[in-house]
Length: 72
Image (cartoon, rainbow, N blue to C red; front, side, top):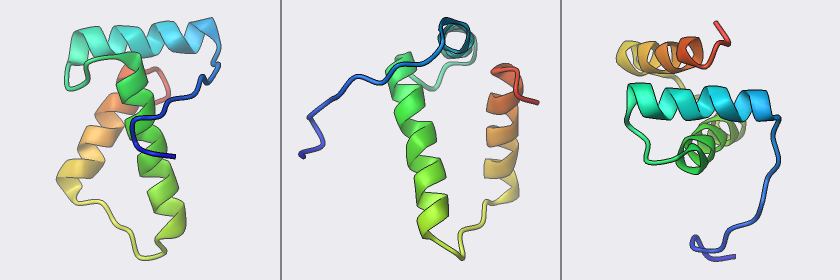
């Protein structure tokens, strides 16, 4: 599958609305799709890399995003 190929993924309306609000208020992403793709890449790269560590700055960014989405 090339990087341009896309498939549909379904999430709850509530989670979608939180993600949409985050994209609109926080910026950094053009769409909910872009945010979801970024988060999945981050999580999946963490799983495959046993020595993956975040810098303090990156860790704060992730926490800030999770707070905005209502997870923290």
